[in-house]
Image 1: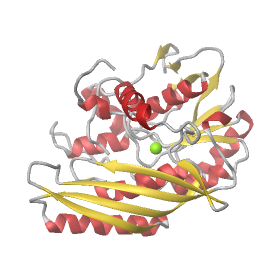
Image 2: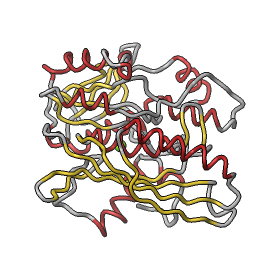
Image 3: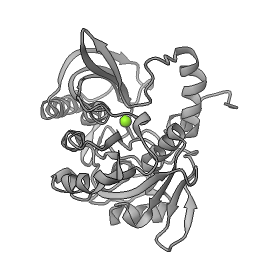
Image 4: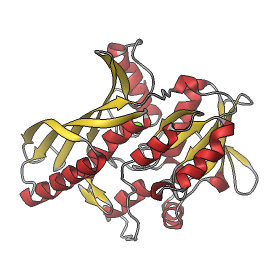
Length: 333
Ligand code: MG
């Protein structure tokens, strides 16, 4: 890491964030026995297996079409437990509240957080509040820790094989674009909503599939970043088919206008699954039968033929998808 000070790019999910984590946090805190490179870590406690994860939320604005920082905190944390192969059960909640925040806003956010928790089958069982002086916080920050019960079908990044197939459960980039439009910085307003939602119905269905090897939710850094994480961890190359990747027209037109690539934009209610080639089609059919998976698609494959993340374009060409560097949209989660 060359930098002497933190920049926004250290929070974007891409290369700078990876280097920051490797060179500061992992250097001091690495625990090789527990590091499974998943969204949650399995902990053996008295014979039962728990999955454990934690998250922080700084999204601006606090409320956006399709959700708010409260629903995002529940879904973000529960989804990390779900894609790691567990059923979320318990959450803790820390609220860092800035002086001047309207109490009615806080009430709305915590009410919808409670609804999202009930709908996801989790209980908020511990919490803390802190109040920061005006100017020292962005209205409200939330931090959540989650515990889930591990499913008997164990998945992991080390189970991925050459020839495995990649599926995505729905259109990508909705959350990133919905939050950006809600900032009104560009004077654009659309119908577009964040996809922030529980992915549990999708992950439960996927865990019934014997050939499921790994799942991840494409949040910060989007689908392209998940592909880079898979490439780095397995050494296999990934080839994505652009024509198969679902992107809403509204998301694509905002991206075309502003120069974003939807493959790098955050989702908050989608799953990327890595599955054996034989089980790809059955899983696709099971996902498409769910309301959350109607637009699911088989989007690519891992192989030993190369070591890049390659996109086969609609025009028949190929281009390398580089690891995310600049921060396209800070504070989207
Ligand atoms: Mg995740």
